[in-house]
Length: 238
Picture 1 (tube, rainbow, N blue to C red):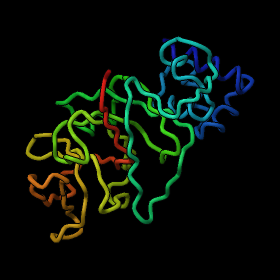
Picture 2 (picture 1 turned 135 degrees about the vertical axis):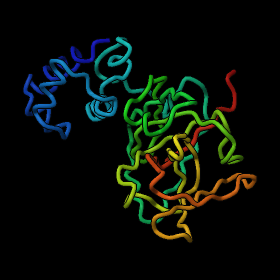
Picture 3 (picture 1 turned 90 degrees about the horizontal axis):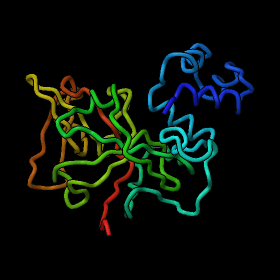
Picture 4 (picture 1 turned 45 degrees about the vertical axis):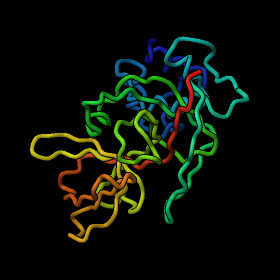
């Protein structure tokens, strides 16, 4: 798998070997494109956007299999195993921003890892998920724990959108993945986020499973957040 070589092929095939056209189409600058074509492998998020925007096959890009141009399939949902997917409706004020064809990378997250490091250095991609009319998303991963049971259980998949602005980008009442760092320990939690009675510098974390007590936590300990857009449960592997 030579990503740089493939980006050069895309530049020639789609943009007449013109870096300016390539950059404009992907919403980046020409210097980045020059680097991607010569010496720097872009982040996974850029490659996924590239494939989605230009309808390029992920199999060709990552696995050296098939043709560059994505082959249209009849199936609306593709994953390694049969799944039942539930898309949670967005709260008032959140744009649906539905994407008709987006390949969402399913990441292999280390159970001992944390969300902050995960965002900075995404791990291996296991597969790609396609769900029709899903709101724009950044990725998917397996969850551990029973804090959101029975809505979600350990081993289910959640599809998320990274929160880039922790101060202004929170929609209270929604479900989030959070990376918490307190006293040298890193913890990744899946919780509903609500306003806290302690004030604007705090949030209240609430589980769907009532055996987990609500907790107020200062935002200074929150290092990363991701809004949950959908959940997938694997019912059988037959």
